[in-house]
Length: 474
Ligand code: ADP
Image (cartoon, rainbow, N blue to C red; front, side, top):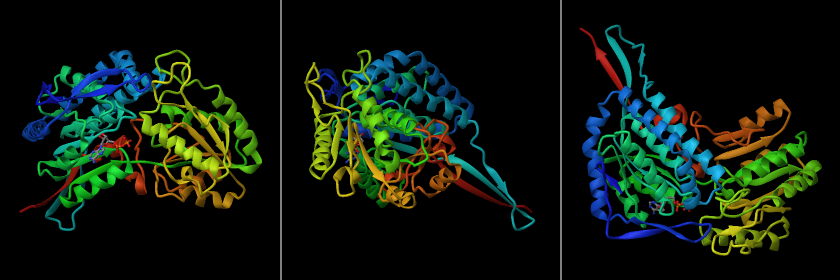
């Protein structure tokens, strides 16, 4: 743990495992009530001073943190592969993405502009200023263990907030590396605090009820988001939530099925499908569905699953056995109800994979609305293909979900692209684009996918209060 500028151990610990090998990587301090109290108090005590520093100073620290993270890209990526499982190349990309937030918000810190508003009376002036909201309680997930930490920390610190962060119990080591960097660039004690724990419940309760915490930011499941949102509602805290998704991937009749299948294979199996923006329903026009599925199946059959540190591995393990079981259950349910397994469709236990949590990259054809996979988030390496006939109704099918995070469309028709972009009820729409994300762009969902945005200009607004000054002149 990192509390008030000091690294703190504890007699109580919990183990962290490599999901590819089952090997124990470390024992990490398991926070108790005292640790949590110290972290919150330290952030609270430090807030007046930190919020009064110049934006230039805050920007300089974030820029230094960016530089140090870039210097450590390779060891950070390797550690991420060991702790989280994604292939080394994907881990390098994530470290870059994580560092991008530090750089972007170092720049945004100096652009926290206010405004003036023409007033109705000649002796009156209005000014609008933005001030940091206060102490932030942040909870992050295991699937993007470094970038989800900086996506919250960087805008919060840039805004002038102080933070207590709790990483996922599966991936505390990646979070510790981010805090080592902040410590080394001279972030003052108490500004950012890290509390590691095997039991997230008391932390969620403290973050949502403690008067000293003014804002809760959470990335994780919709289920936990609802618990935290409800609790935060009692004390009327500001919340940002980045939750689950069930992304549709539309391939229209005019699209190139080969190009679309290539895109589908690249985006679906990123992070072994463990991403909230991973496509969960691939609606393909029936006239090109056969060709699309054949190309997708061919590419997927060539993917190699295994330990992400080995050469040529494109699909890593799932996070744990429960995740493998969920995928198995969804695939069995779909097949029982008439879907066909084109590739994969089973656990991987041979060739040294038996100690890890592996599931074969899978393509399912003939997926229909009555199947669990049609509605439930999969968070695994399964691409369900759903042929459609009627272009007028595919928008309704795509929107028929409580989630609203990401959607993808392949079409070469500009009017159709614009109509779908406008009609899809999702926070992020990729038009012939499988990677519509960047530190500079607002990321977030509608409906059950969450509240608020991270990244971009919008991302720092989540950590600011708007203050109006009315001045009467005499
Ligand atoms: P996933 O199912 O992807 O693991 P979770 O929502 O369970 O997603 O986990 C995301 C983050 O939320 C993790 O940091 C986890 O420790 C935390 N978490 C889980 N349950 C709670 C809870 N009841 N209160 C606060 N945080 C929680």
